[in-house]
Image 1 (cartoon, rainbow, N blue to C red):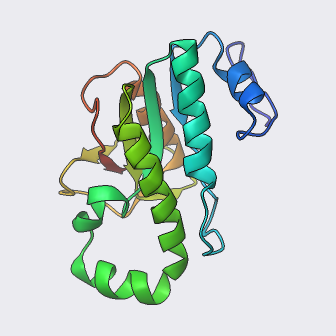
Image 2: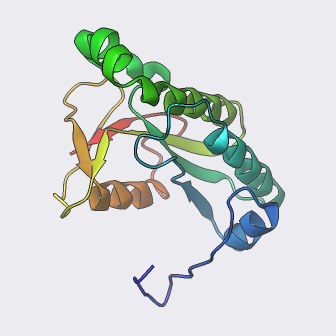
Image 3: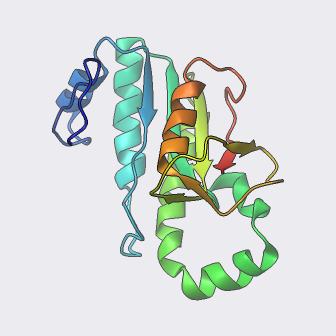
Length: 177
């Protein structure tokens, strides 16, 4: 991590370690969780995200933190229906079998969050691309107007904006550029 800022505090540790979670969230007003396997994963079943999410939520409750923004993926939850038929029935099953393990884990996470008393928003992202911010984010609850990707800087800015926003409170928008 090379970025520095007077309000940025970098901590190193395992997200599955309760003591690390407690240190990270201490004194915070909100939590933005951006956990994932990275890349394509290995296609094997996993509970990494859902288990870490469970620990984070438990520690948030103990600390009295209610605002929670979590990253998910398009294809998880009801957003699968936003994807074109050819993608759902042909491309994913034939060429993206590795993605199902990721979606299954995100669906477990999704269910936990939805059953909580937190002020949550689950952000379902399209493909996250490196590159310059485009300065615009399309958020959709019905899949209309979505593009195939979002730049990492635009995604990050949108997540931070949602901390104070109630626009997508207890909802799961899909976001893209």
